[in-house]
Image 1 (cartoon, rainbow, N blue to C red):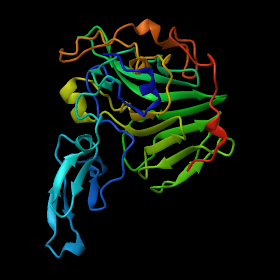
Image 2 (spheres, rainbow, N blue to C red):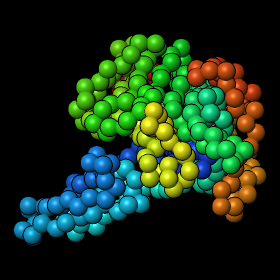
Image 3 (tube, helix red, strand yellow):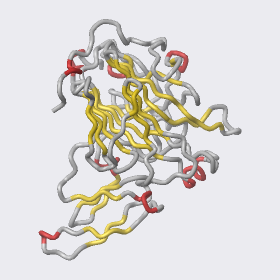
Image 4 (cartoon, rainbow, N blue to C red):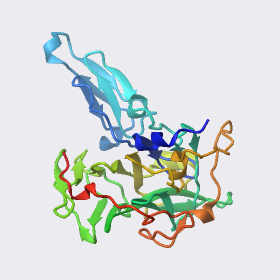
Length: 327
């Protein structure tokens, strides 16, 4: 059943992690963590599984020991003092463990393979345009590329925001590989969790560190809320999925989660179209891996181009709230 157009003014949440087969766990804008929780980052010490002490000094109980399960590739959540452990994708609706995928507004998951070294329009609306740049590897035994999102190019009003993962050979979680720029000028943010950059020309635009390296939350008040993290393809990922990662390139890419506000009923793009009231899902949702085709409709000539066949950017309207100060 088609959703009424009024629904499009409500909060739109969509997971965006692109890959032809599989990749790392996704990131998504998060609700506040419970005050009695801890977050474990398995990759920080070169392990997918590590044992940590979880203690709540106020409950007068003995400390317990929590283990981050192997199925949580990058992070897991521990609730204290019970030491019950969750992958973050268990705790935050819409996130994905294991096989990466898009989650459309209709709640269905699908893949979009795309092509390496090309740009594709993910969301295109009158006031907002989001392109993704794909990197990839070709498996000789397959007819397509393995692909991941290396960067986002975001257009709103007369502004351009760039979020990208730098090419990295030997991955080290303690080194920041996130590249940020606004209207062509590099953005430098202190490597302290919670450190924030705020645009002087667009005070409603802020970028906040969610981890000391490689993770940020990007917010444009009333328009979007993006959580992104740079992650590599690990040796284990490569071995399991036959990615054939080499020592000169860890295929660093972005795990991304979006929230959108106030999309119009004319929105389009790989994901954007799923928010239209007249959208009809023609994918085989019962398949193990539903795939959205029509690659040619979404190709953009570069990371900031608005020339994909389904582009809507600049067709009426404008974002008036971008000069307001973020709360």
